Length: 327
Ligand SMILES: Nc1ncnc2c1ncn2[C@@H]1O[C@H](COP(=O)(O)OP(=O)(O)OP(=O)(O)O)[C@@H](O)[C@H]1O
Ligand SMILES: [Mg+2]
Image (cartoon, rainbow, N blue to C red; front, side, top):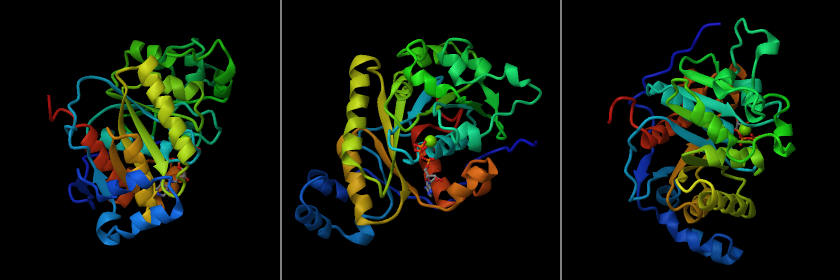
C-alpha cells in the first residue's frame, strides 16, 4: 500500500474572514431565553453580513501561537456525531501538511471508530498477537510507543482503540486519572503533536484526555445544539482545569457541518458565552467528509480545496505556525 504525502497547504483556497468583533455576540444574552426574545434579537441581525461563516479570534489571543516542543490536543464533546473524529483527522492532516509529525490517539471504544474504519493502522508484518492498542496502554501492559502505528498518510500515526477499550471505562485497574498523561509524557517517539479523539461520553476516557491535554478543541454540530449537554461539558472542562490540569486551555470550538443560518448564529453565541477564550471556527458542511472515511484518507488528501478542508486548514494555521517558521 502506498503512502500519501500531504502538503504544503494551498495558498489560494477559499478563506473565511477572520473577525475579532462579532455581531452575533449580541445574541449571547438571549441564548436559552423565550422564543420571542430570541426571535427579536435574531431579527436585528443582517443575514448576509452577520450570519455568514466567519472565524472569530478573541482579540487577546496571539495567532499563530508559537510552537515549543510537543503539544497535546483533545477533541471532546459527549454528544455523538459532534464532529470530534472529523476534527481530529482534519487538523492532524493540516498539521502534517505544515511539516509536523502527528499522532492521533483513538480513545473511542465504538467498533466504527477512527482506527476501525477511517485511519487504519498499518500492521505490516506484525503478527496479530503482537499488535497493541490504547487498551494495553491504559491497563499498563504496553508503553504508548508500542501501540503507535503508521497510517496510509506519511507523518500521521495512530494509536488504535481496541475492542476491549470499553472495559477501561469501568475497570478500576485501567485508566486511572492521569494514566494517559503519564503514558504520553513517557513517550520517546519523535512526534510533534498528539491529538486525542475522545468518545461520546464524559467518562473516564474523556477525562483522561482532558487531563493529558495542553489544549482542548470542542467540536459541536450546528443543528444539534443541546444547551444542557454544552453546560455539562463546560462544567467538566472547568472542573479538570481546577483540579487536575490548571494549564489546560480551550483553544477552539468548531461549528461542524456549518451552514449559514440563524440557528448557526445561536450556536456560535452559545459557544462564545461558554468558551470566551476560544477561537470559534466554522467547518462548512461538505459531502466529501463522509466520502473521505470510505477512502481511508483525510478530506485534504482527496480535495485539498474543499470548503471543509480549507476551514480546518485556516484553524490549523491559527493554532500553530508552519513548522520551523517561528521560534
Ligand atoms: N463539515 C462536515 N460536513 C459534512 N459532514 C460532516 C462534517 N463534519 C462531520 N460530518 C459528518 O458528521 C458525522 C459525525 O462526525 P464525526 O464522526 O466526526 O463525529 P464524532 O463526534 O466523532 O462522533 P462520535 O461521537 O460517534 O464519535 C460523520 O458522518 C461525518 O462524516
Ligand atoms: Mg468519533
